[in-house]
Image (cartoon, rainbow, N blue to C red; front, side, top):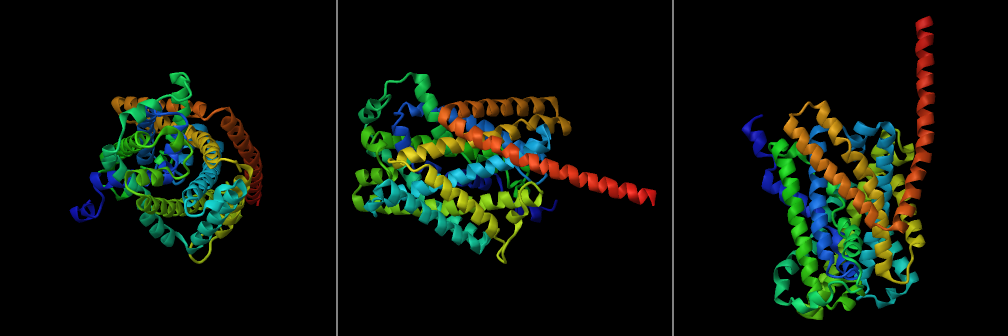
Length: 450
């Protein structure tokens, strides 16, 4: 390859920054309030999740470097488990993103509340969530270019405050405030850490896209896995620092009841005006993130429809390249889920959605990561490369299973029901494929006889 072509590609530092920024979206925005319900002992959950997330990130980076087929996690999954797992991975990822979009909309409403106090009742919260979901979906009708431009700009509305808090927040940090909130419910360490695992894992969802830029990277075999590890590690450090410092500034009881924790902490550090600016920036970041995830999910369903795994209606696009019918179907599912999860407490509603999303997303994670060993064997890598990839991949799977356990019985029950419905849908697809194969066989036999 020419040096000129290489000069146009992304280096290790640039890719590391890209990975970190992509990961540090709206996932962190409500977590301080949710983690306050566990206590500052959730710091241990962060450490475990950071290590598990790095294993997952490395595994996906290796899968992406080896598997050049389209389909992402679904394609990795098929390597080990066959065609049905391609569908189940696509289906569960789609369901997870529907749940995640509702959770992000709930987060946005929480941050809007200081400006619109009347949103405090459950029914008004519901209408606020519905309005945000509809507005962002309509904005996506403009196609990927507009969505990409908005999302890449608005994400900094939460990244900058979180980074700033991680650095300057220590001037206001009170060790006694942090220590007094260590284990407010006096649970066992194991139970407390497990309670925080699903919450912290939520912040890293989207890690599967970390290795998706290998074609635009210099020396991808070396730089993609390194960038994924460095980027994930950097995001983990910022997550840990920002949530730790906020728990040492805001008393635990106040933090646990906050619907806009980052706005609250900046109000404590400076004044209400600064807090309101941060709150408004977080709302904008949520809306931008929601735009991106809704479009991503529409593309997931479009790709699955083009593969014959989703109904053809999901593949229809407008002149701007937006799969509008698929978006409208997704919007209907989001609105139904928002209605089903109405709660008197917005943080409780967010947590319920978060746990369900994490569980459902672990299905494609586990299916796809177990495909790495098959791909390593097929590519005849060296024994050392196989041992490293298989070991890290297995650790990533074990951590993901722990993440399933940490989601709680209610989320596992609901997520299992949703996953099993996917097998019903796949039954119809498999039957259709058999009929198609029979028709092709009959046509070939007739041609031979003629």
